[in-house]
Image 1 (cartoon, rainbow, N blue to C red):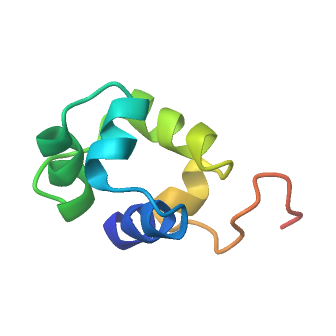
Image 2 (tube, rainbow, N blue to C red; image 1 turned 180 degrees about the horizontal axis):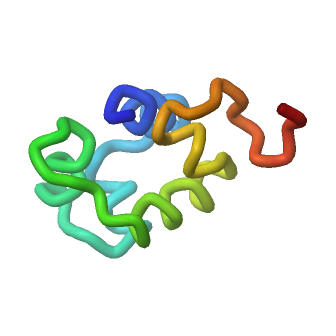
Length: 72
């Protein structure tokens, strides 16, 4: 999960600080989420999924379909 979150951020050409600002958290908190040092709360997973236009299932590694509308 953590690698996917990092990859999505990097694909969007955003720094940790930039995405943290967009999602209203500190850069350190976001960094801890991305590295797995801190558990990501469900509400933040939803924000990340919406921000990256993907599904929580994709972020959690339950599917390899990036698009939330992709057929399973």
